[in-house]
Amino acid sequence: MENIFIIGGASYNSVITLDEFPVAIPQTIHNCHFKETIGNTGAGKALTLSKLGFNTTFHSLIGKDSFGEKVTSFLQEPNLNFISDIDPKGTERHLNIMNGLGERISIFMNPSSDTPEIDYSKFEKEVKNAIYIVVNIANYCRNILPICKQLNKEIWTDLHDYDGKNEYHQDFIAAADYIFLSSDNLPNYKPFMLQQIANGKKLVVCTHGKGGATAYTKEGGWIETSIIDAYKMTNANGAGDSFFSGFLYGFSKGYDTKKCMQFGTITSGLCIESELIANNKLSKTIVEREFLKYYVK
Image 1 (cartoon, helix red, strand yellow):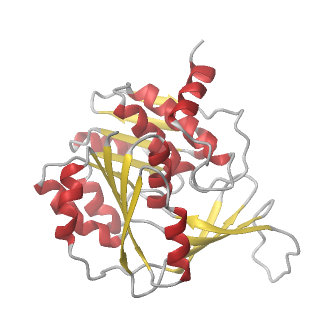
Image 2 (cartoon, helix red, strand yellow):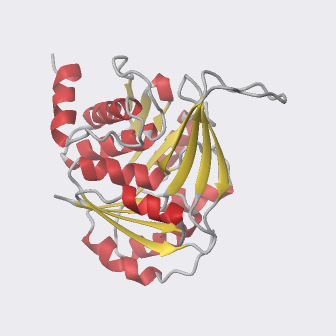
């Protein structure tokens, strides 16, 4: 199994699902689907990649509280080594309001600390031993970027709903070799992708929800993939992280970008059929079977 190190992004979330977002007026909503579960971008990637056979080490901040205990319990999975530092602010918590289209309003009820006291040198061993490094955009993670560069490690990052100008993301953009993002807040995404390849990035991938995904390669090629309609929406939380993870699975096999994106499409499709941020049934066997089903004629 290949080693992967992921840093940043675990929370304990409340998730409310409605047929449609409520109108912004005072009202009472009598019926919804509600659950509490682990969330956030690092946890989603760690759970998915460990199920896909990577020897996964994942670091995040958690509080010394019951929510941190719940996050830890969710991460007790084969191939997954969860390491953490205590966040004095407590475990990060989100309220996610979902609609029937899979769209989300995310409210940070308790954000994590921006500048926790961490000895970053302790991560050097994990970075050295990892084939792949995934640095998520939690603020504390920017301090590991110089260590990755010093050790000559390529960085994968996910900018999520980056708008093309937010200064918060610039350290991550500058350091990354492989960039993923969503077009939610960047509908004119192609100029950004072109610019990043011109700046020396090896790959940029932009996801569009039901609109599929677009990649732009260092060779100057545009590659598009569509969703698989056979996967039926139950819960969209974690779909982007699952796409990222499926792509990386294909990349680790030496597949071309088109095939990697097809694996990302499969893992995100399996994700939305689950109530969780990573489908419990996910495995290498299942994604390879699904690839043959949908892409091999």
